[in-house]
Image (cartoon, rainbow, N blue to C red; front, top):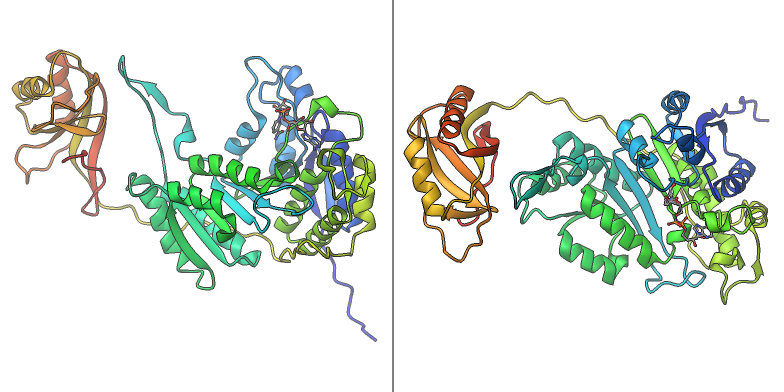
Length: 487
Ligand code: NAI
């Protein structure tokens, strides 16, 4: 006789938001399924969405809900309706930014032949960096003709997304992690992402690793997604390619996704609140069921996630379908509630035609970024950007040389990144936006902020409209700036 104490299984508190439109129906169906599967979860309802927006809270989430979110650290969120008209902020963006949800994870899986697709074997997980890159929203109009958006990539940001992707692959029994960047062009920003991928990848010897330039990588992904497994990438590429991957999988309406941070994680269906079919018991709850399975795996209840997902797959292949996916393989067309009951009836069974899934029992992990000593940083020059439209590059070079007679001397002028002085070509299109690089006239001289300020004072006194500066620094002796094209 086994006298061992029964294992105490811990329960996890999870905030849950029923959302708008079809949200309440698909959430009820989802909760019914995962509760029946034995999920050890204590639900804590919070209110988000249309009602909250209309009560005058422009973020769509009430102040007391933040407390629940921060305490539980977990949110299962049904889709919400963002009211039309100005002033309402996207709830997803607010939650993602406020709580530091740095990883967006989107499995893109095909369910051939039950859902139409050109790529029957596709099973790709896109891990998208969620906070950095061009999404900081730092944009400026600098001249009549030129606008800029800052692309910011940080080492800790790269480290945590890349490590998350590798941990996800390891914990979920994946074989390969691919990194997409454009580091042949953006050598410093995307170059850092790639470098960190190589550095961290070494710690995962059991996983195959590859890097692809994002353009050819995207083409290969669209052509034959079966050559990819887990793909990690910076924000913009991930934004675009997670939609491409979901679309070619053919199952965008069935997909769940997660947004992961160090303290909070949010799980939701990819689709919206479908107000056109709300309240009719016809919505498909599959996207939210898949999101809930991801939540279970994330909190270490992988065996329950496996039960849910395999029962759902079995329901699909048994031909029990909601109206949105009904087709030649449908045996029984059902509504939202009946679909949930069909999944519940299949708990404990595995699919026979589709590939059964096996979520890991372990929790998805993310290691904290290591603390590093700061580098030895030295100021070696300055790029001064000018708004100027009074002539040709040589005229500007001559005018600047006339006034910049101090410690810093003009070395180069570029226009839209192309070197136009000295020795520019007449074919280069020049706008009214000039980057003028100044470095010490005496190559061995050291410079300080005071020298930069003195230069700017001289330029201002001579009537030049400088619109911004970028300091040129070396870090441990390595230049921290790019050269001009053609330099
Ligand atoms: P939608 O995804 O809600 O609907 C697009 C079409 O797909 C509609 O015909 C709808 O009936 C159908 N559909 C969507 N989910 C379905 C399901 N589970 N079962 C059966 N059919 C389904 O996108 P739409 O119409 O552009 O947006 C509606 C609202 O949802 C908007 O207020 C939008 O802001 C919001 N939305 C919210 C999201 C979220 O909370 N994460 C994401 C996307 C949109």
